[in-house]
Image (cartoon, rainbow, N blue to C red; front, side, top):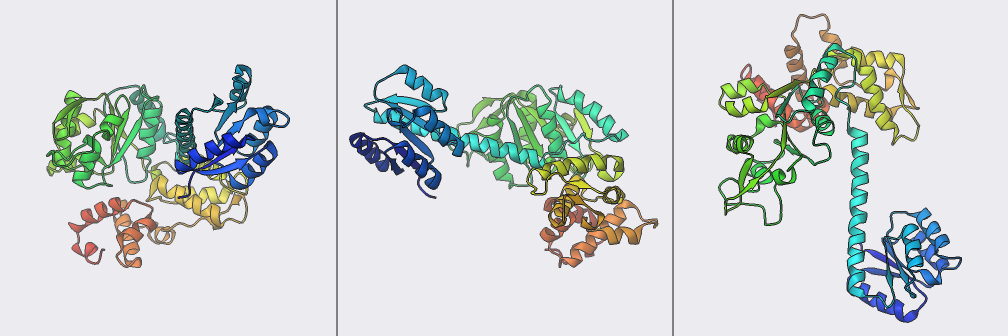
Length: 454
């Protein structure tokens, strides 16, 4: 990674040398400009990360220079210097966008504190903008639509959002359980607090426990002092456990105690922490079956499903697809060079006639792919690529159950991908963990289903 670049705009060679030496010793790359014109040229060509500007040398005044510099990049923080200690000049530079001002002679330790603080604020601001942009592209309103199923879900979700009780979200893979959890948080009483997510499939047992509680349960491995657990980060906010059916039994026991007492122990010294969280969990697995098979604690299941929200699969609400597709395309239009994207009537009808085994996640993938291959801003039926179209046509009118059709199609995709689960999951538009789960279910019916899986 390259060094952080600091631009010094100063005509006094003594001050310039002092600042340059100080900053270079602190491992900054230093750029020097003796006047405003030189500052503009360097700003445009070198792209500084921060600028230190002497307000008293600027031709035409500090106002004009600040306006020109900020028009090129308004995110670069500016620290203003003044030799006369004029409060009016200082306040004017802050009004124009400077993050702070200092009088000469410069106190170097104070300058370093201001530089570090300004750069931290700059990084945080950029990260916030990136996160907002990411959510704007990917978040899909889980309650968008006019179907009876969505109307019923909307009523239940609105009541659930204002409750403090645990919520369990059930639904097939890709139905938008994560989006639903985010919606509940944003529309709940804790919307101004943190929303913390733990995907139970992304970590091993010990790693998940360390992330969630801060230690491995035995006190052998713990987060270093000063490194908070997810529970501590989520204090007064919302904790979302995705794929909660994958949670190891040992963690389930600690989580149950947390829900009952709002306390947990962390670290080798078993320090007790009190936390106030709203817990939301999601699962695509039949939880009752997991409880019956002693893979999930019944007491915890009862606590989690204090409020139960069941998300309908997309195939059961085709009348919602035009609105959902429009929402996805609106998000894609932000990064599209062709302007607003829209579907032809035939393309919209094709979307409604498709079975959507991957649900909303697959809908998003199909539309993203269509936007890439389309010749213009209007997406036609020919731009849409469905992985199971041919199979769907072959089985239409048959008396096979949906589960049989799904199983047969998964078997076909696995064969086509040479038994590689990861590539097959991508083709199906579902997480790898979901495909493994389905294959485990099929194992009991026909061991051949897993015979060549890798």
